[in-house]
Amino acid sequence: MSLPSELVDRLDSLVNDGIFSSRSDALRYGARLVVREEQLERLHDRADSEAREDVAERLERKRVS
Image 1 (tube, rainbow, N blue to C red):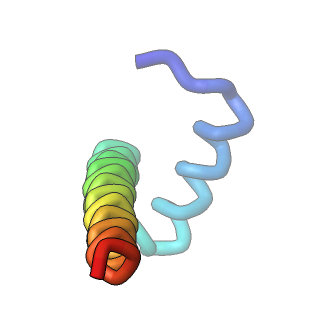
Image 2 (cartoon, rainbow, N blue to C red):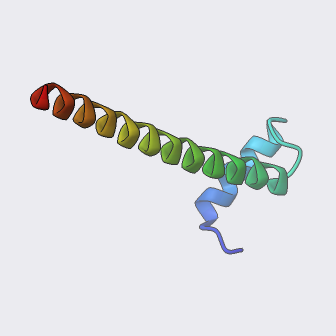
Image 3 (cartoon, helix red, strand yellow):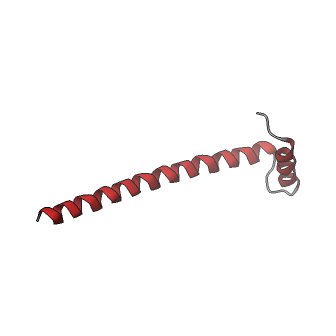
């Protein structure tokens, strides 16, 4: 994996400060965050879509009644 030197320096600072035990540990943490964020976004999109469909169905039933 190639990373810009500035990012490597920042990762090294986090390791030196004891926040992570190694660069690999920091990168694993970052990868988990990316995956979690994507899962949350998909969940949000699905909930939004279902809510919009529910509203549309209720409005249609009200209109027809």
